[in-house]
Length: 218
Image 1 (tube, helix red, strand yellow):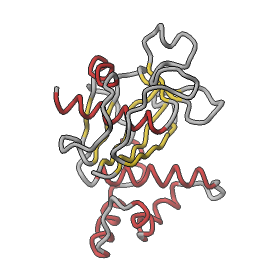
Image 2 (cartoon, rainbow, N blue to C red):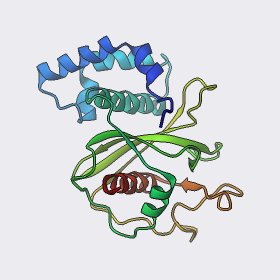
Image 3 (cartoon, rainbow, N blue to C red):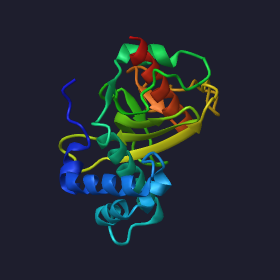
Image 4 (cartoon, rainbow, N blue to C red):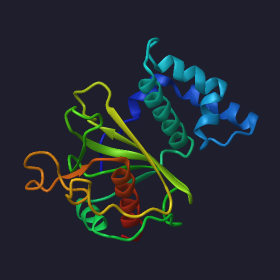
């Protein structure tokens, strides 16, 4: 799958030397990089975050940039582990009603690349739906934390992010509050086109976990 990856331009803009500075500072202070709060309190990480954000950034923008920087760093520190899932694997995996539990086959940290323009979400209520390119993942025995990359395309500068986290174990979503089936398309004509929609972080995290299970057993 020779698709462009969403971090290439960002890492070049930030500079890998800054990631090296963060790694040295984390090692010196004994901070585990998967701890986001401790990571963001690290001096070099905080400095990079300030450079990335506009001076007058609102709180939700600060949170989005913080999540992205942290996910970029932990995947960079592990040499960008990638996982891929096909359309057939994904559709089959989402049909499973089994509860969500951590399995040793899950990568602890990776970027899961999804089939192009298959999975869609509405990052902010009322905004246009956007396709997911993929999802940054941190999975532990107690929790899965994900950051989806939406609307990533060559002609656009930047992309949208959508974050989610659920404690494990957790039930698999079956139906939504409106009675429709989980993962069903919510855009007009979406079901006829075979699209998948995500309406909340539970569905997002479930899609990631099921995808990783499918790729591990393929």
